[in-house]
Image (tube, rainbow, N blue to C red; front, side):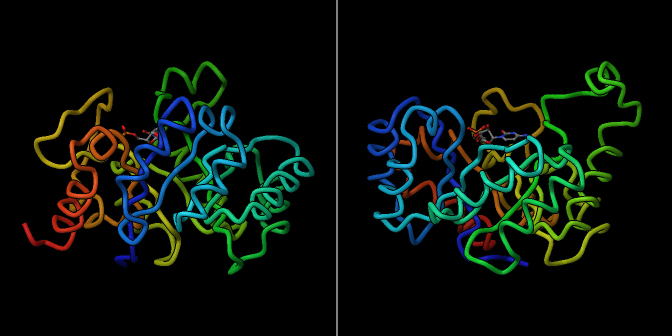
Length: 233
Ligand code: C5P
């Protein structure tokens, strides 16, 4: 299912002014943007409002993980801010996911998605916290739990997308970082897919940071990525 504006540009900047300087070079009819923990902690709701004023859909990537009542309050606050997408950690468990979903009813204005296993964690890291199944099994378990609790989707690595696409409903959103257009630098990403490969293997949204934010012409780069997705180059 190819969605309108599948690219979410990760605004991984230390302050509002650097983020806004980049955003001036982007077109909200071509992409959405992601605000994460560092930028939000420094620049706060005011920056989110500024981005919205410039017509950008904002994914607030704060990965909430707390007791159900606290997470319900946090996602409500995100919805009040008018963000397009917000996320929680699926490992917070069923009660937390259900409380978040209740606070943010399905088909409202804000999409609620879950993080499964951080891709920075390998089998060894999971074993150390007494999770003895493989990372892939844990990802599947948490994605199914998220779907059971009627969340709108999960963040997953492109490597996990084909299996999750088979296991979950067609309209369950898969949001995928670790994307590199062919020939681009890998930076610190280890396993990457091209935009077209990720979409073809079932991703709905692609989180792309440096390939766009460090490009000489970010809009031209985005157009190139969209053309690649649509098979035009
Ligand atoms: O610059 P780059 O395209 O590597 O940025 C990817 C973005 O996706 C960053 O904001 C990063 O934190 C995020 N991300 C990731 N891998 C995950 C989850 C999130 O790269 N597993």
